[in-house]
Image (tube, rainbow, N blue to C red; front, side, top):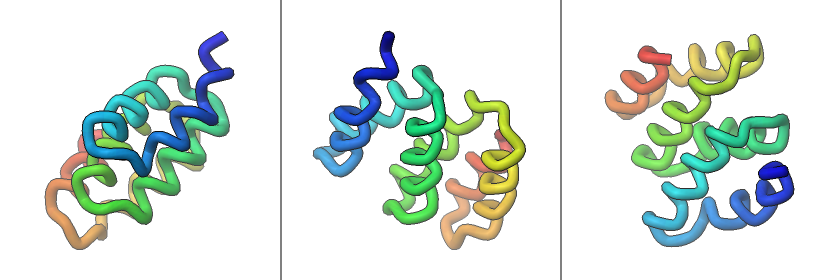
Length: 88
């Protein structure tokens, strides 16, 4: 039932920080393919703080694709993003 809110949450990812972080957290708890894709894209392209939060939320998903993406982020140029991926 919560998956219906995923498109709205994805739209919120580019909002001001409080809204974006709420959307990131919500996508992490809802899960599903669309949520995972949005968080993966954000993790690879966003500024470091949002990338870090996306990496943290992706730890809620259990998939080889997401694990591979988190491993790839271990080479990110911001240390705290690397740490978030390593803790996944």
